[in-house]
Every structure is written in structure tokens, then in C-alpha cells.
Image (cartoon, rainbow, N blue to C red; front, top):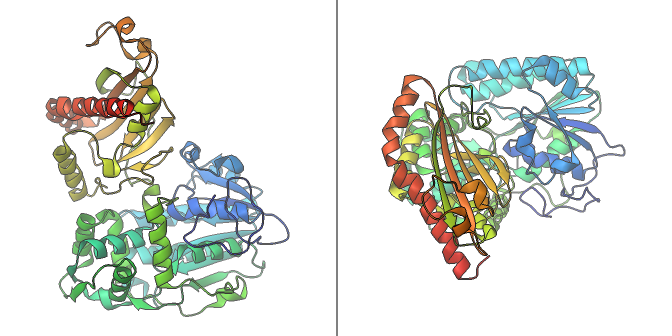
Amino acid sequence: MTPTDDAAPPPTATAPASGPTVPVAGPRPLTVAVTGVTGYVGGRLVPELLGAGHRVRAIARRPERLAGREWAQHVDLVQADASDLDQIREGLRGADVAYYLIHSLGTGRSFATRDRRTALTFARAAREAGVGRIVYLGGLFPDVDDADLSPHLASRKEVGEILLASGVPTTVLQAAVILGSGSASFEMMRYLTERLPAMTTPRWVDNRIQPIAIRDVLRYLVGSATMPADVSRAFDVGGPDVLTYRQMMQGYAQVAGLPRRLIVSVPVLTPRLSSHWVGLVTPVPASIARPLVESLVHEVVCDEHDIARYVPDPPDGLIGFRRAVELALQRVHDGEVTTRWSSAAVEGAPSDPLPSDPDWAGGSLYVDERRRVVDAPGDVLWSVIESIGGQRGWYSWSLAWRVRGLLDRLSGGPGLRRGRRDERTLVVDDVLDFWRVEAIEPGRRLLLRAEMRLPGLAWLELRVDESAEEITGPDDAGPAPEEASGPGRSYFAQRALFHPHGLAGQAYWWSVAPFHGVVFGGMQKNIAEAAERAAAAGKP
């Protein structure tokens, strides 16, 4: 297996079967607890810690979201909410090191209060559980008054101060732009540069930034686990290059083989306007783009490199900007992006499990259900279902899907531009445009949960079966089960479910119900026909 970061690994030690390898961090394996494991950095850190020989405890509110990760069988999965003192204290008990990788990236007035409360709870839990060290990845900020910082940088700074005051030795790593395949910062820069040969930009495009490659971030995180007990402080971490955002976009264009971009800065674009523009042009929604843009208003350059005393620089030095972009693009082109910024759930998105069938006590539940016999083996039908979304689309009225995605983005949702992590396979918790994989039974069932802005909760279930008895019935159109049975045939069931919230939810369902025949009916028909064509062509 390849390493989870965006660079070739240094000399390695043997790692567990599914994890990549990095230098062994110390003579004694540690028990390390990691929060934020469903996020971009946390999902990449876990296999690095395994490769370093540590025992890893992955803490998540819903551990079942980790079932599809290749490293899941090599860690202890613990269910705990970091904002619940009893749960997180029990989850941290016996840990030598606890990684705090929890951030709020959504907009709104409550995120700073939520982050503050969660950090205070975590700090107390770590102290009472006897944790030996806390490691936190925060943001790099300039030496200005807190009132002059962007809200998100101010919150990151406050969280670091809370953890440092916990009474537990703490390492706070302060990073600016993180460059790696799938990171929000990289995706924002990538799509702005690729899609806009000429652009007007805010004045902050000429502010200096010290970006850092994801591999170097991971190396610092792993190395921080074995710092001496008397070290408790913040460290600035950055790569070897200090650039303006203008230089970063021009540098990306050069590495990607694009013509030089025309970039004109103007004084009238506020961070709010800029984030909405980023939300329209790139896959990163405005709610996530805004804190990133607000952070770029400041010049963020490291004041010190003291981290090298405890985590020495590699023999070949830190990864520079151009090399980081080359490695990230190679990952993207090879389809080997292990985690993305969209790994973390969208703020406010539903997280409730699918209501049980056939009866549900949770209120109104609207169902659009369709069944069909397909002249293709089940494995061929499944391969079409599993490749849905992303570049392949949704097999029906593409204009309607694009309009719905645009409306979602305009209302602050993710829209369709999140795409897919992998164009061929899906695992639990994968993002699929404005859906997320809630459950998957390979070859049989795919359950998607909507993360678009809706006045209710929504799911889409696609199911394959070799038995007509489960999929077809006496009231279904088409051949009866005994007529439909035979070699090379399979049975396709599709359900769209919606649990409305209030009158707005009721109105939404009935306003879109007339289009279900075109959207959902067309989708099932076209998926079935795609499977039949693949079967006729002898494709797996």
C-alpha cells in the first residue's frame, strides 16, 4: 500500500498490514488517542501512527463511519463525543498521548463558543484521565491583537491557549496553508487557478504566506508524541518557501502546465464576497471558503523553527511549494486521494440513521420506491451503481441535477462539486456530491444520506438482489417473479425517503414530487440500461 501523504516515504520500519510506514518514533510504543479521525488530517494521521509502532485508539461520535478505512481493523474504535465530559474522559483513559484535531469550519456566530466549550471539556477530561501529552494542530497567526484576527484564527488561538493551560504537557502546532491532495486550501487554489485564466482578486492576494506540505505536518504530529515531558508550548510550522497567494497560483499554473494567469487585485472584494465567489468557482462551499479566505487577510509567516529541536528536519529538507504541488497533483491524477476536506461532515447535515421499515414512529416519512428487473448479472448492475455521481453523473435529467446543485451552493450547501474520492469504489462515509455514504453492502446495497440544504432529512437507497422475491411483488409493473427469473438477470430496487421538518418540509416534498418520475424514474431506467449494455459488451 502507498503512504497516506503526498510524498515518497523516507527509510521505514515494518508497519501493520494495512498501514503505511514512517520512521519509528521511539523505543516504546505508546497508546495514542486520536480525535477528528473522520476529518482530512485525522484520517491520514492514524496510519502514520500505526506505521510508527504506536497503539492507536480512534475516537469518533459514530465509529461506524470508519468501517471502510483500510486501517480500521488495526485500531481500537471508541465511541465518544469530545464535548461530553464523561464520554471523552473514558475514551482517553490510559492514553499516553491525545491528539485534538477538532475544528469548526462552518460559518455562524456559535462556532467559537462551541469550540471553546469542547476544548475546555477535552482539556479537563485529559487531565482527569491521566493523559501524558496533548497534541493540537492549530492555525498560524500574526502578532496582532486578538480583535484584529479573523474569527477563525482567533478561535484557533484560543483553543491552543486552553489546551496549554490544561495542566497536561501540550504541543500546539501552528500551520498556515496545508498543501496536499484533497485539502481545502489546495482544492481552493487548484480550481481558482485552473478555471480562471484571468481574475480579479482582493488585496490579500499579495500577502505573504508560508505554506507547508501535508507530509511535513504529519511528520511533526507523529514526532510530537515523544517530546520530553517538560516541553509544553506552541511551535510555528511551515515549509521552506514564503510566497504570496499570487505567487502560489502562478506557481501552481506552472507546475500544472497552464499558461501564466492574469491576476488583478482590487480593493473592493471583502472576505464575504470573496468566499461566495470561491463557492461558485471551486468545489469548496462558501461556508468553508470563508474562514480560509479570512485567514489569508493576514500575513502568516513563521517566527521560529524551534520544532526542529524535537522533530529534526529530514535529511533532504522540508518539502517546498513546487514539490508539494507536484506530489498532490500526482495523487489526484492517480486517483489515490485517501482523505479530502469533505471527509468531515457538513455542519447542520442530518446524522440520524435511516428510519426502520416498514413502520417508523418518528413522524411523517415520504417514500418514492421503484423496482425493476435488469437483464444483467448482479455484479454488473452493482458496478454501475457504485460508480454513480461525480464525473459520471446521476443518470437522469442532468440539467435538473445541476440546477439543484447550484441552488444548494447559493444557499450555503455543498452542491455537486464535491464529487467523489474515488471514481470506482465507495466506502462508508465517502462523499458523493451532495450525498454521503451512510451504509454499503458491497454487491448488494448502497444507502446515501443527503447533505444538501433541506427542510428535513433525506436518503437514497439503491439495492441489487439475485432473488426476484425480495425486489418484485404482485403489485409491481413488469414480469412476475417466475417470468423474470433466469440466468444473467438481477433485480434492482430504488427508494428515495424524506422526513419533513414542519410545514416547510411538507411543502418541499409536494413541490418536487411531480418531478420524481423524470428524476428518480429516469435514473433507475438509465442505470439499468447502462448495466444491460455493459453485460452485452461482456464488461465486468
